Length: 638
Image (cartoon, rainbow, N blue to C red):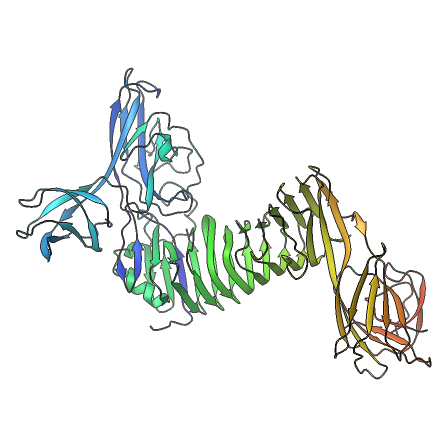
């Protein structure tokens, strides 16, 4: 396997109608061929009498009508109802030419049909031959050959027709209107609410769609390259818009890179929807993996249009860029290290493990069903009033940590009840920067959710502090509890660490937190600083805590040193170094943060929320500012 470094990859995801699979090196390229629609009238029904109905149709993969695999649009057909026949039956099929037959042995015959688009299990009717006319269930051989069970007689030609819904396709969705669906030049009239219902339960039979009450139109946003305009700005001018959406599937337990994928695409008759050079790779389609395969590469740029979902093991990308556009939702699975994920799309990341990466989206960032993998070291930027969405977190179901939210708030949909006390917490080290609106966190708690949800080191640059919106269906309501870490380093006057010093912190309500310094003189304690409580089925939108547990009192004791006592106010993580004085007195007790300061003398009056109305000596000496505390750069003298 040859690695291509520094590639620029453009993945534009679309699929056609009948699912074609092409296999080489265990990679399959799927596409659906364009269906052919046949219409007939049926007695009864409630369509408008004496009305000409026009329609086309599209094969759809799964139920992802907006983003999944789609076929090209069928050629337009139409039929006129009358006073007694106001139901339209729609049949669909694909067909092709047969250019040869050959003996495959064992009572099997290979049928040669260029770019046939059939798949194992499809049923075909062969006609126009001397020896092979009949109905067969086929086995896929390659993209130009399928196999039937028959006795080989001789080579000849013929045709085939298939009424099967393509393998992996679930239905045909119709685009129907009682006036023409094309303009005078034969161009599709796009972006209309002409899509019919599409589930089998809405009148579909095996192959015969009873089009009666199905003119219950749904959204026009189908992201179909022919019938909507959502993709027009993203498809390269030399790409075809009449091939539907493709899917490239990595099918076995192996690792693939771009070279492997490009090699297989060249065999699949997909040249109108991809291009490749030494520095770029472009495709209208999807890239998915099986449960034991993966796509791995580094230093690549992926420009993806039309992707819906990455399944299985997913992608393993390092130091790369993925740009997603032109879809309603993109689902990425796999591991992304030091990557940038960008695009005009809604990103579903429940199966993505991201570290030290950057996400920029003009829509919602989703982590659906639960947080499938930990998210760490991520910057998430959203636009146009969208937000980050974390849904149904559960114990051991992943974490949302070390994440910077820019512009968009964090929406939490909570339905599981579990103890998220540290270290089993979900949310930690969250920052909210320039979030639009009146809150940074929106928590929606279902009846099965938690009464207490804990945040560890969550901070906002919002004036007045972090803002919340809470709605709880719990009978006792729900509280959001905010904890911040106090990291202490205890030394003597010469800077030597003091081990086994007793640390006690008492909050304003009398709750005590205790710890003991380690051999490096360090102790870390999570302090609950404030909380917000929402009553049962009552919206709470506020920046004012329900309970404020500040000010804390910090006491440090160690035999052979003077006890140390001081008030502490904490609304973000603080790193302090404290030098204890010997019992004989003299000297001062020094409090510094992690910044290297020359703790000299100089006195001023401190008047702030942290140390109200107390006289302290402050470092540096040259600072003569009165009544202001800049972080806790303080020397307190006994």
